[in-house]
Structures are given as structure tokens and as C-alpha cells.
Length: 292
Image (cartoon, rainbow, N blue to C red; front, side, top):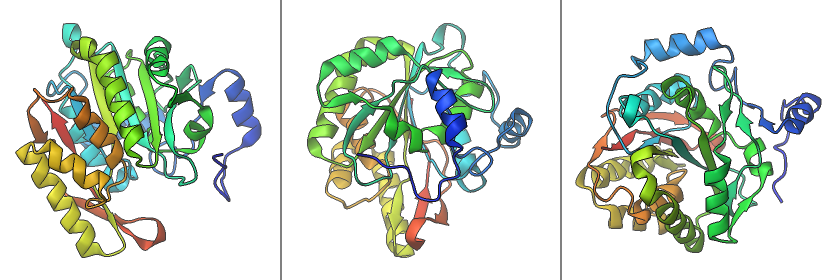
């Protein structure tokens, strides 16, 4: 059972009122990113993100650090798909993030109807979520992980800014079990392969995490190299075998194993590698990638 983080500042009365409406409230607005629309829009402009402008990526990988550290990379990732407007606009955005709480393993969908952001609520694609749930009993609807996990939340203002009318399919994964990676990969392929022209895939991922800064940097550089070369098999194996301990690596492995980006051109959405100190004084490296 996933527990609420200790010393959390969530107002539980307000949260329960919101949950009755089946709206997932934010937990890190004002901390990891702005809590008001004016500041959020100003940030988008400062990072050069322009609505309706950019590339035509089928899938992107963006970091989930605080915006002041890694937001410029998240902006670059979304810019690589920002040109998908009009007839090319996605009908849904499948957004996947890791669970930082280590006590729960599995693949979890949400029971919420919408997620709050400073730019307005984002609707959940209930039908697509039901398709995924019906694929395997290992894919479960459970809102508890979604209520306390930030890896998807950090990216949602970018989703709302770039694709204001597009619903999301939020997916969280806990742990790195091969059976969960395989099940998610196969479910993504079965459900979304016929829909890829109308779908944008987003993975929330920090690409190097280690207590030694030099080790984290080497992992980040190796991750970038394998992306540049399009060496998906080696990259997927590196995540599963722990050679690269990126936060969200299991989800990247699932994306690669799904085959949904096999025909896409892998690219660095930005050449930047940024770092910060994370939990337990570990060094975290951030990057951004796209499949065009």
C-alpha cells in the first residue's frame, strides 16, 4: 500500500473535496513550478516555447525536476512536438511517469476525470484508459499513487500550454520488474499502434541518478550516446540491468520495447545536460529527447 509522504503540506480537507469531483489536485505547484497562470505563461515565453510552433515528434522524453533546474529541457522536449497542430494535432497524450515511493510496484491508471494545472484542468481520456486496463490484470486503476506522485504533474502545464484541448492518459509505474515493463510495452503497442498518427507519447525521466557525481555524469552521457545512435536494445537492457539508474528508465524501456518509435528518428531535444542534488544527496542529471 502506498502511504502519504511524511510531513506533507497537502491540505487534506481541500483534497478530499476535490477528489469527490474526481479531480486530481496538484501537490507541488508553487514549489517545483509556478502556481498561477501569469507566471506559468511568462515561464513558457522565457524558455522560448511558442504555442503551435515546433517539431512533429511522435514521442518525447522530458525531465521531472524543479523548473528552475530542468524546466528549460522540458520546454525543449515539448517544443519538438509543438508543431503538431491542426490536422496533425494529437487526439490524446499518453503521459507516463515513475513512482518515487519504493513500496509499490506495478502499472497504475487513474480514476480521476481531470488533473488540475495553473493553466486550467486537463481532461483524462477515459476510453483509452479503459482500453489499457482491459489488456492485462497487471494494469490497474489506482488513484493513490497518482495523488502523491509528482513525475507526471511537473509536465502537465506544458501539456496544457502546447495542446490546450487534448486529453491525457496518465500512467504511473512503480519498480522495474521485467514483467511490468513487458506488459506495458505490449499494451501500448496493442492499444496505440493503430492510433499513432493521433497520439503523442510522453515519458517523464531523469537520466542519471547516483550518489557519486562522476558516476551519474557517466550514466547521463552513456544514455545520450545510445539515444543518438538509436541503439534501443542496449539502452533498454542498460535500464533493466541497472547500468543506467535513471528515474523512469523502466518506462523508457517499455516505450522502446513497444516498437511504437522504431520508425522514428531519435534526437536530443537539447544538447544540454543539467544537474542538481536530489534526495539523499544524490546527483541527478537531466536531459531531453524526441522521436521524430
